[in-house]
Length: 335
Image 1: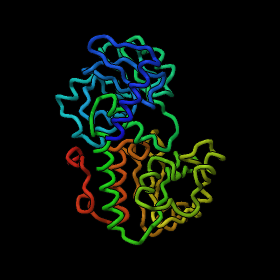
Image 2: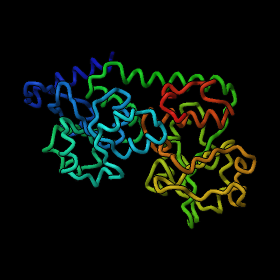
Image 3: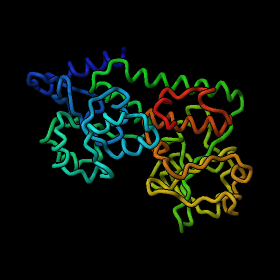
Image 4: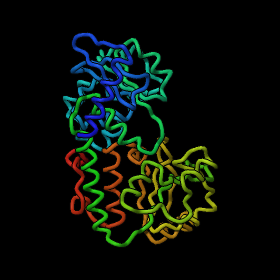
């Protein structure tokens, strides 16, 4: 309720400052996370083009989609029940097209009445501004990005209570898992398997998307893992940094999660290899490998967080998530 009141106050203050009035059938949308200030958007949009991960948030709020972007395509492998065949058939498929390679003519063919993008796609955004009202989310700092993005989409869709509902679903599961773990506080390190032929692997920090889920359980990333500031100093990235394969033995966490090498496909991982055996958790079988279909480890959306939590329940507790803290979107998972 407080967030809705503040959002309404933000609009009220922004309107006279912007000097804007909207056409019939439109309303003024304002948000602290909206780039370029208040924007006239449809009162009831019917065909929304989401260019980035907001598509996944919009789906959780029953947004009227016009396209299927690469995030939708990737997550439909993880949550195949997320759309019915009829729903999917009604969407224009952008396939593997990356957001920065968007074809304005293809987007125009989708007949959007609202486009939702992010601030780090400036060149793309400039090409799309004349097609429909363009609501650009300020990508900003990593910390707090997920709740900001959820609140942004909820306010844009006028989905009252949706942001609070999604946050409560996660908090309920986090609490249940923490209660089940009890006083034990095992450490969990997440690494990317090296691309074939590489002599380094990448380590995810507590500021990464998966690191924040681990942190929400009250757990630490483990000894040998740098904090965000140290990571940024050596890699320019607060979420991930590279280490030599020769030093992987320093990763002495209680549990290890091995994921694929980014979005480039399967990384190289053989648990019997002496290099991997140098990691105590691998040598002792306290690991889980997600070498393909691992997009949720990079995603900053509720759907991603729930999947990571499912994996952590299996790894840490050796139990079915449904027994400990059911995924509220389990009906969408593969049968």
